[in-house]
Amino acid sequence: MRRHRNAKIVATLGPASSTPDAINTLFRAGVDVFRLNFSHGVPADHRKRMQAIRAIEAKAGRPIGVLIDLQGPKLRIGTFAEGPVQLEAGAAFRFDLDQAPGSANRVCLPHPEIFAVLKPGLQVLLDDGKLALTIERCGRGYAMARVTVGGRLSERKGVNIPNAIVPVSPLTPKDRRDLAFGLGLGADWVALSFVQRPEDIDEARALIGKRAAIIAKLEKPMAIKKLDAIVEKADGIMVARGDLGVEMRPEQVPTVQRRIIRACRRAGKPVIVATQMLESMIDSPVPTRAEASDVATAVYDGADAVMLSAESASGHYPVEAVEIMDRIIREVEQDEHYRTMTDAQHSEPQATAADAISHSLRQAAHIVSAKATVIYTHSGFSSIRASRERPEAPILSLTPMISTARRLALVWGVHSVLTHETTDINSMTELACRTALEEGFAKAGDNVVIAAGVPFGQAGTTNLLRLATVWPNPPRARKKKG
Image (tube, rainbow, N blue to C red):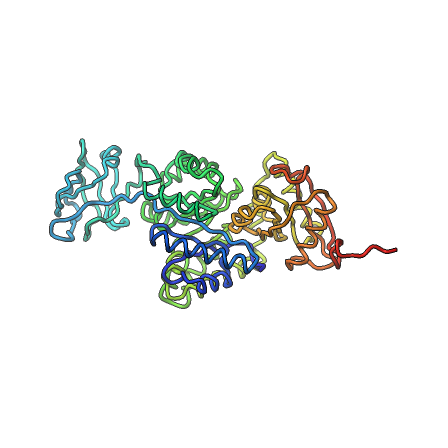
């Protein structure tokens, strides 16, 4: 099943899309990676979804990626004695550790770690940023604030501290249980919430090891200040625009999104643009023109993948949302200016053998008008570096590792095929040409460019580039004369 586009689609599974038939329909419509959101549902739900995905994968013969999204810490206020309160702009308001129900003048903030970083002048946001307060003075276990943006406030609403690193682990006890469960299911990617520092990635890596790749969700302004270091530590990045939009001004989000994508392109790390991409399709069979432009902009900017959240998890039109996203991507990639923009964003290769080969592969494919660039890979690293180059010809990634094939389902332009090991250059060339022919990337007489490593079968040895022409019949099938 070849996708006739390079950017990938991630879709969240939920109540609207959890039956095997629904998941299969979404896959056929264009989903490359399924997201299991561990903020909702119970383990039994996620197990059934994973079983359905793997059954569909086996039948379709195309690797499918699975991303588990951990909930992360949730900082919330306490309760109110008489229901919701109205906070008036200019009024004084107290946060403290007293568990007693609050009032219009105070509320419990049951997070000592927050008080450890509060200081005069710091802003506190409540209820997804709908209300804003500024700290005026604070002491041990309390803080006095002034309401700058008032409104109605209900109990247990979320708290955000945009300009401070809150000293909490990104992995709560629930996250650790969910992580162990998700890894046991065989998840390919783990999305880590509440990332503030590069060290947060280290904490997750110590638990995950090599069992899955790590996506750092960038949803806090403090993380953007350490963007390059976080990108270097993580295996991929998610632009979590919903949470970013809470802690920074709306007009800042588009420029931050573009900055993140560029940082990922330079580093050669896959990047997902997420949240509210086709939000109106939760209730409507068609998106707004602004939403279509939003998806297109992410593709023009070079995102590896665009993601559906509630649209596919709980919306009324999950299949239609995937279909229109697929059509938007293909329309953009057929635009004559898309290649110009992609080439303009190209970063210089690093001084490594893998990048030297990948860079040469891109140039060679252009010169000989290759129909495919074929990469042999064990870990997936070579295919990811080839994707960084954004070659004109699709990337046909051949690997004997199913885990690698599944992870690469997220990466721009990569079509993974599970194959056997090769032992010499002739069998390597034969397999590459035959696979390009069988998978519909090339026909007899077309050129392909092949990258591999010698000695064969060893990870991290990409050092070989070869040009080949696809034969009418696979060489192995031809009979010797005489």
